[in-house]
Length: 230
Image (cartoon, rainbow, N blue to C red; front, side):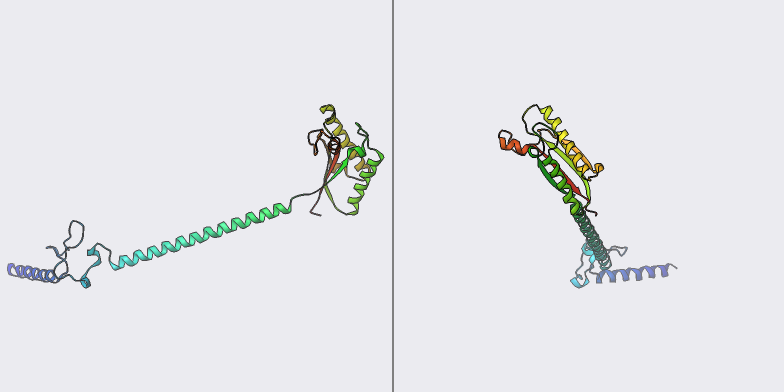
């Protein structure tokens, strides 16, 4: 038994010695590669570039390299796909915003403004329409009827110059706006679609220091919003 065991040890030792002699790297008694302090295998005189083992040289073996390359490719593909998706989403959002802006622009109300000079339609300091003023309002209403348009809303604004008391001017502007509304309704206008407002002397369009400027500021503006859905 001792002879057989000794023979086996001798054979094993010889095999390991032969392997060590032919190995490009040093082997320890267990047949493992001997490494230096940096983790690299210690080369023997048998080492050649052709016999180099990637893992011994501080790298990974080919299988690991291939796996790493595959992983990198997959990651790059995912990143590219994600980037493409983000780009598509951004493009879609931009298109939606542009469409919304266009729709909003299309929905801007069409408003026509007609200005009546107070000097030609009212007596000085009064809120009763003159015959000329009534004729002007009747002609205005008739023009909209002839155009066959649907009126969505009418706003009648009264304005004065800065002469006299501001409180009086405010009241006068409101009364003149109401007088024009009454005449519009008398000519077939829908009172439910008409609102009035007086601004007094607060919204001049010309210089109140001149006679001409004050004449321009004494006015009634009729703003007609048309229904575009018609």
